[in-house]
Amino acid sequence: QVQLVESGGGLVQPGGSLRLSCAASGIIFSHYRMGWYRQAPGKQRELVADIIGTGSANYADSVKGRFTIVRDDAKNTVYLQMNSLKPEDTAVYYCGARKLIIPFSEYWGQGTQVTVSS
Image (cartoon, rainbow, N blue to C red):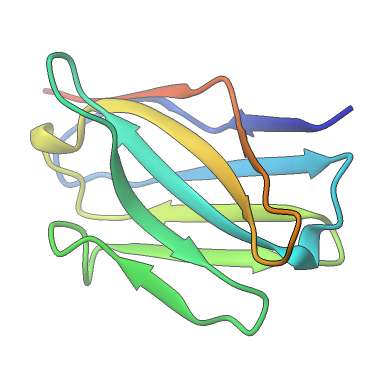
């Protein structure tokens, strides 16, 4: 059974930092592109950042220079370090796993709320 378990969300003031963690089980972690996505009320889910086993990462333009995605394949865990948080970063953040080889598959975590407010 595949599980992606997120943690680390919460309430933070503008300019603050949070670190999200996503622990995966039931998959061969190195075979997956791991990503963080977010969905704000009334908006579509969007990619925040993703990363493959080589460490190559992609970021949404809105978070470049503020967020850093890192994966630890020994721990089957991916992290999202979020600095200089803004109110517009408020959303439910989801961890996603997308398999890179056939047969393709995709899994999602349950989401964790991040609220940036004074």
